[in-house]
Length: 108
Length: 529
Image (cartoon, rainbow over all chains, first blue to last red; front, side, top):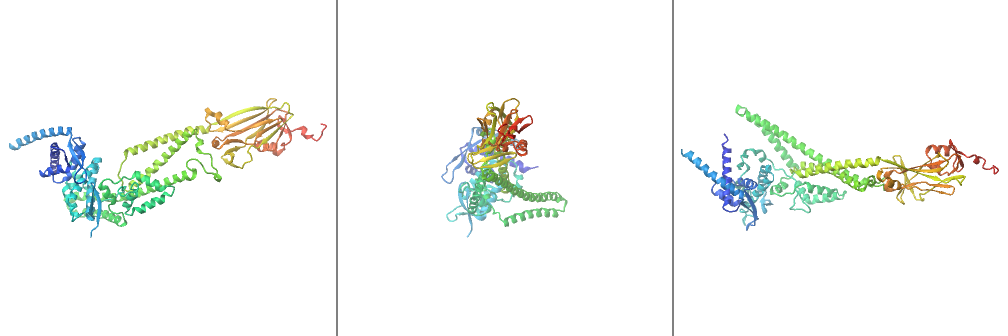
């Protein structure tokens, strides 16, 4: 049984959910998102984030714009799209359903 | 003292220790090959990661320490994670082969240190020589029929410019010298040897599977090594072949035809332009364009292919490929159509005949004389196939002699019939063509003058204009042929009238068996007769 793969899939799903919820609280550039995720120890290596951001952008969940920065070159600011907000809502409700379901099984 | 290298990542400049540079180069290359499967998205991911690396490295720069060290790079790599660390769509286990790839130097255009498009700078970086020499070489080649310019433009089109940091690093990567070639060959050899050793060490049943795997791996490595070598050789061969074709083609066009059409044949005399072979000049220009496309596309494709193989360029221009293929096929179809249309014209031979009566009633003798209408300018004789003509440099015209024969008239009248013949005639306008074959004759009292030459313009060469004159003489009519006429008579009559029995200059009479010396002539000195 490939536990590594199951774990990876699980973490990936959760990560995508978390990226969307971070962005729902306001636009952010990649390093902001990274800092939030690292605070809650959701990711170990930062490289994981970039493919996910690209994927979500390609799926139409995110959009980005370039914004001047006081330090260094312009930064890519990500924002949720309307579609992204819808998906986030769905993910939120299914996340709570899932937690309740798992809890009820674990408590028995 | 340590050597530092100046690089640009994510829009920021850094000074970097050499070992740090190689480490970063290797790391970015491994990421790039990991993400390259995703096309444009992969490129975007790379740009974002580069941006982040720049951010992380920038924090390390202090007033005391301006250069990025190996430790700094290692720390940044630790934060971002290696390809193996990436948990991404469950593909993390499949990338080892790519990850271990050795950094191969690749050929890019260097637009950071360019004069024109960075081709010379890129080549210099590739071969690790000063771009100045490359530029001088291009300049030198430019004097060879502009060959240098052409090669430059082709490279400009074919070679991508280095945009991402990875590409810029790859551009400078490890120098391609004999020692590094040796290094890479020995590395390849060691890999193979290691694979074979693994095979030897595995004697337990547990390792049997490993042994099988190592064997496959070893064979694979040997095949890859041979394959790489063969591919390189093929690349060079294709490139050389393409270049030879290109140079030959240019030489043919420039050298032999003086830019499309003006054949410089004998004695440097400008020969009729090929464009006159065509029904109209539009056809000619279309034909030239078709030929250019037909020849140049495959040649450029060859050169492009060769360069791609040699310099390990992995770009795919699907749209461009489809476009050139379509253009080539269209050109081929058009070319064949033009050839068919124009050659059927060319094969067409048309004849026009005019018969003009000659006044004989009041003249007992008709003199036939030849008038030299060549105006005495220097004319030179040529023949193409069995078409003989003279060319006058003075009026740029072709002078051709008509073929004359003297036959018996079917009635009591005397006639001159002029038969014009021409090839490559557009039938709808055939009269135009015949009018362009100029030929004159006239009767002055008892003398009929015919021109020695029919003339056509230089441009009408391809018509192969010809004239046959039939002088129809009624029975018992007395004629006097001038000796110049002998030159124009067809072969049989020349033998009969000018060689066997000399009629020229003497009155002759038409009989059922052709011309005979007149009876009067025989008794010419007898005034009583």
